[in-house]
Amino acid sequence: MLGNEIKHLIGKEIRLELKQKYVLNGILLYLVSTIFVTYLAFDRIIDRDTWNSLFWIILLFVAVNGISKSFIQESPARHLYYYTIASPQAILLSKVIYNLLLMTILSVLSFVFFLLLMGNLVVNIPLFLTTLILGSLGLASILTMVAAIASRASNNFSLMAILSFPIVLPLLGTLMKVSKNALSAAQWSGNYGFIIILLTINVAVIILAYLLFPYLWRD
Amino acid sequence: MLAGILLLYAVIGGFFITVSFEGMEVAAESMRNIFYHVGMWFGMFTMLITGFVYSLRYLRKFDEQEDIRAVEAVNVGLMFGFLGIFTGMIWANFTWGSPWVKDPKLNGAAVGLIIYLAYAILRGSIDDTHKRAKVAAIYNIFAFFLWIVLVIILPRLAGESIHPAGGNNANTILPLHLPPSMRLIFYPAMLGWVLLGVWIYKLRVRIRRIRLIIDNK
Image 1 (cartoon, rainbow over the protein chains, first blue to last red):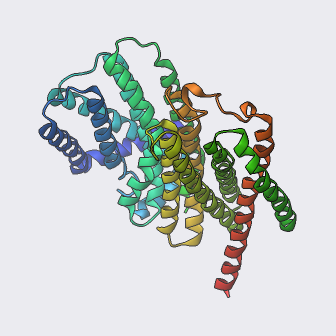
Image 2: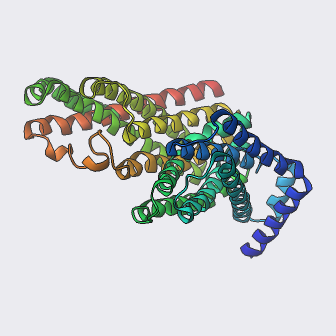
Image 3: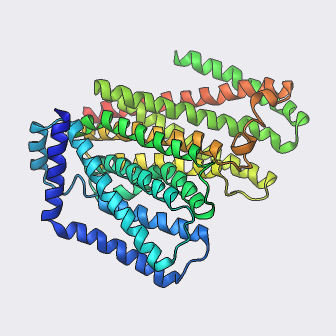
């Protein structure tokens, strides 16, 4: 039942995105132009810390921009319609899964583009890709929930940044630590603890969002 | 009940004013700050946990009184957080040579305060009372979890920290490592700060309730 609803809702999200291509293209252009501006400002980056922090800061901004539209793209009337036909949990999970897909694509694209312009400093590529996936999941789930909260308030866009930047920091800090390790050493040992922390944060955030979202959805 | 708590606080408050001078003889001068800085931190913890509990209760009953308690608990918690950071900065200035050191514990505390300041801004940006109470409660529960990760779990994993009870010196200055005469002051002082927080919180809740009644007339 829930699975079926989620499947249809994700289909809806994808069709909506393809119909309004300018939104997706806007985010892609945002990503490309931000990385290009940093490229012009920095030329090549030799310092690993700078490379690492710049990459994650850019990805954070891309994620906030990409996900903040989640709950304001469609009209309140249409939300009311969804409210009558689908369970709130299905709505939330479909948004999280859709945003996870979006974030995975966006993060891999920014990684590739970043490599092209800034040069490759990553020693342990599999570890870095693992952090990218875990980071996409974490950013998608936390930011979807924050977008839902911010959509209930006026002054949505600045509120999205105010609420999400500090709240995303525990996740982002851990991500930056693991990816810094991926930049400096080839071995995996010593990173398992951080990966477990990342997984725990992700799972706990999704459970919290799953429990809290119904209250938010029923207006 | 309030009078009882007040009395208890007065007794304990008197306690730690007289004995804090003994603490000075025992440890180095700046060590005295442990009775204040750590106590404020405990006060903040108590208040933020209270706020979290009342936010949970609001979502179960949708009673406006629970929301008032939650918001005032967070306000008092924020106040204690700022006091704790300021006393910490004075302490750091003497022992580490600068008011702010780049340290996971310190930065976690600062970001934690920003999370709760954002709570205040979120409340300000919603006009409808019930909607504000509901959205704020949801944010508070969500933020509390990430705040715990930020303030408690991450600094312990960070590895390097000069702040006591963080990173690789996790067990240096716990209450049990204090000399007995300091412990005698430390525990009542902690209780005193927490009770002071509870007292301010109760006053603020009452003021807000009265204001609500006046507004509704």
